[in-house]
Length: 457
Image 1 (cartoon, rainbow, N blue to C red):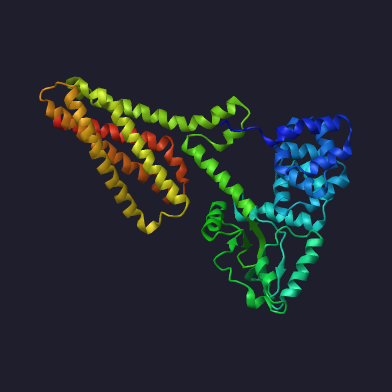
Image 2 (cartoon, rainbow, N blue to C red; image 1 turned 180 degrees about the vertical axis):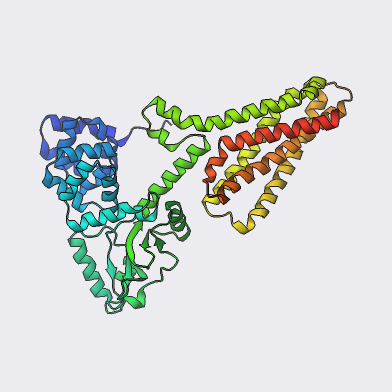
């Protein structure tokens, strides 16, 4: 049965356009309420400029913010440049602080100054502080919209505070609440579920949980944030400064975006390009992203050709050796990339411990040794039956031993390169692309031709 691949926005788009053309705004407003913000944002570029403004003005503030946050920067700029100041002020005021920080960072100075005048002074200060943190850190991910509780408050008093804040739209995250002492230091946390189910007169200090292992420093890399969320199955985590003061909260929706972003970057690097290529609209830019990675492969190819030239005498004496070079290179490359991929994944999810690196290297060496031996026997049998050289056994032994050593060392190289990158604080994902492929080609070919020369000449 054929799957239905029609995008949701394609179903409602014609009806929306028809209602806009007929100026049936009441029905249009009703229909917009039933659409998911993500679906509407996906089909946003299918509207004309005028249609976009009509749709956006008919949305209530909450829905408008949800859709606005899903739009790319160019579309956000268009909306801001074409709305009245009052509408812009409402939109920006109710946006989450982290989303405001992302937006303001990308805006030109002229528009940023204009937007700042439409916000409250304290909101501008919060956005400025978030924007000061380095990109891809916890500080950039966090939202400053959260509720704090005091340890002496009762469950009833805490719920009343939450209700008051929710009515004023001052918070975004209420399913995780954090407890501060008199010095504004973070001392604990409590979930909304735990708070609702607790006796009304019980104090927060009696039901709060420790957050020592869950809190995140603002300068921590976003990849480490994602690991912590995965390890502890978190939906939210507190962000603190060096003095343990609560300065923000990171929620799971932000972390999902990080995981997708990191995965995209790693896949791009493993393929020998950049994640920026996905959004590149110019052939020149794509060429620019790919050229440096391909240059490594180009240099590797030159080295490989020099190795073949170095063993010209061996190949001239036993020309049949050349017919197995593609097999040796292919198998060496594959097992090297396999090793690199497993190691990189282990590093990313935190399974590769520094103290056990030697054990991991030894394991990969043994894996290459065993697999290489198996394929060495297979290729030796093929060489023995295919080529009637004299003595045939020596030739088959040379070919089989050659691919055995080639695969063993290739597996080891595939392990060592990403580990070395990791130890020198370089993203190990870079290693599994052209670097591993080039290195395994060089090692495999050298091992194959060297052992063949020793045995046959």
